[in-house]
Image (cartoon, rainbow, N blue to C red):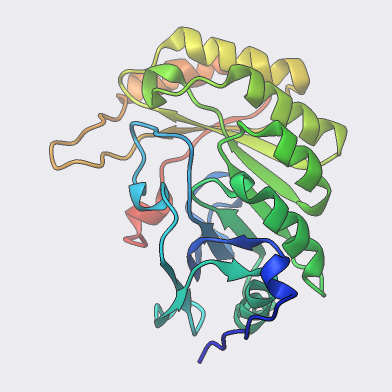
Length: 264
């Protein structure tokens, strides 16, 4: 059974965070695809992407789900917000080596919890690889956290697909990773509504910083019974990959493999 830390007057002054859940699962996207990770999902997001399949993470919740046994989905419900010491305790209870390859900080948008992460990541008292999944639109927060992170997976938002536009912030975040020698890759969600000119802009943005940063084109997974948003056709993806590889060294096409396995 998960234990809850008793709050003290001193602990009430420390940063807290709203979590959605902590669980052990196979990573279904990006550079870590297929690896086993301990996911820490934060609540709260300031984006509203059209293809978002987890709108329950947009707002902080009153409680969170904590898996008791890694991979068994035997969740316990705990109250939010969560203290740094409580999260450290849960991580140590759930972390298994060599089962887990890394800890995934996901959301929502983890960088909205900058102060909390700045206290939490150094508090882990033995080295666990840290993978940060982010929308890549909070460079100031990333600046303070990059040295604690081993890998950054950044969603590069195409306005034609996501309804969001953050080109300058994306470039700033990638530059921070480059300057701090933090490994990074970009994930780009594509649909049949993708504007190829935006893919060209994305490719040039990445190439300007480092043409060897891996880019993953991820065909959108429909979130409605009507099959919307609509995934691209195979010939579209082949064309888009070819045009991006004209300026980038690594452009891979990988769908959401966890959805294919029924691991939601």
